Image 1 (cartoon, helix red, strand yellow):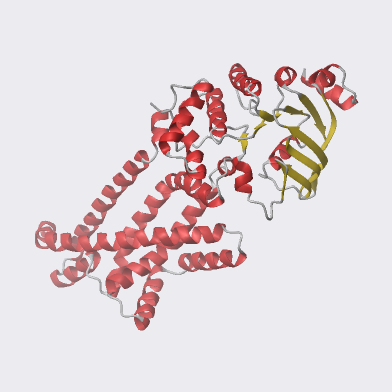
Image 2: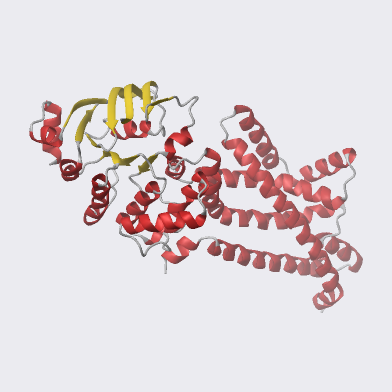
Length: 242
Length: 221
């Protein structure tokens, strides 16, 4: 079953036409990587998936249900969609454990004790079992991003969205985050990732989507897109980035 | 020395009056925080009417001299309901400080990275929960230095309530100076009282700031 099914998606910011008619289906367990030059609308597309931005036109189906920002319970929709941001956005006034438990306790109504158990399990999974009492300001970028991943996973989402999650990291910290993502993919998590990490895309993605000027101009398996791109713009983009 | 005599004569009288000054300040500032938070939300709301109401209130409190507001509210309020001069004074001081506190809170809330709200919303929090659990605690910490400043101003502004007949510290000093013909020494003593209060208060605000900022404190270890 498709977790996400969007048709004819348009988004404007004032006069700027950012998304010009996007069709995209993401199947359960699929890992989709979105690539493309900056300004092509990748992040906006991702933010339309969990309605941090409202689409101007087109339909978005999540788990088979059409979502209308005007009438649907978006809080409920977002509960099933985890998101990880470029700049981490950990809550600086909460320690690591509470960053991970705050939503399960306050949104899902879990007891603090139960949420702690879930959080400890997840922190161990992302390789930070000994950091639960640390404050975000004491962590490296890579550690922050892994906590952010654990925080999103604590809601037990059906799908995870990654918005350039390694772009703000020092080069030597990129791998520890990608590794966690790779493990999640291997575990069957449905994922949509906007990234410039072509190595990750090649190894982990089931499908690579190339965006330019607010449109999907090419999509296919990593092998197709990276080794035999059909579009000139894909070739140019890849030659610049690889 | 005249100065020492004044201290001797008025130390305890001023000390008791200081209690009233502190009560006035505490009550008016506690109310001002509530009023300020309310109007900060009105100003930040997407509702145009709420914005206009907040702008009008903030404009009035900042645009009129405090003594005018005090007199206006005192005689205004007491013509409708019977209020002691203490409560009339407290309410007027709160009304005045509330405008400034509203602007402090508005600035602090707006200065919290939008990404924090987005992260909270992406976890399924409602706008209210995101505000209460994520934005406000951070905004409040950031507002403490400005709030502390505003509280010190509030403490000093409480002197004007003397003109409503509240026997607080400054009112006592005026009465004493008129009786002992030593205004210089008398106001010097009163001034020292205020100065000591401000120093203690500043120290408390600094303590509070450090205490409420564990993440920053530990980061510098």
